[in-house]
Length: 80
Image (cartoon, rainbow, N blue to C red; front, side, top):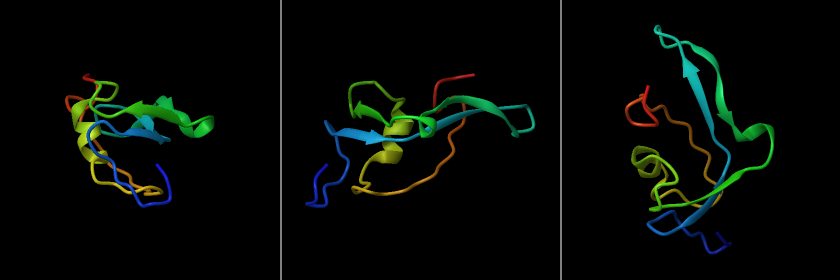
């Protein structure tokens, strides 16, 4: 995205850091399954099934430089 304050929409290419954590049965974090904060960010194409649909939905409408945090249940992300 460029300086003209674009927002994430269908067909956007987004570069972002994200973290997916494994939780125990009580909902406490056990370990990171994937964490891009320890290296380079990921670039994904929205609408190309590179992320789960619920994850893409959370990104829609966010502007360049946005910092968001959200939780998804296993069935909304990648499954159990």
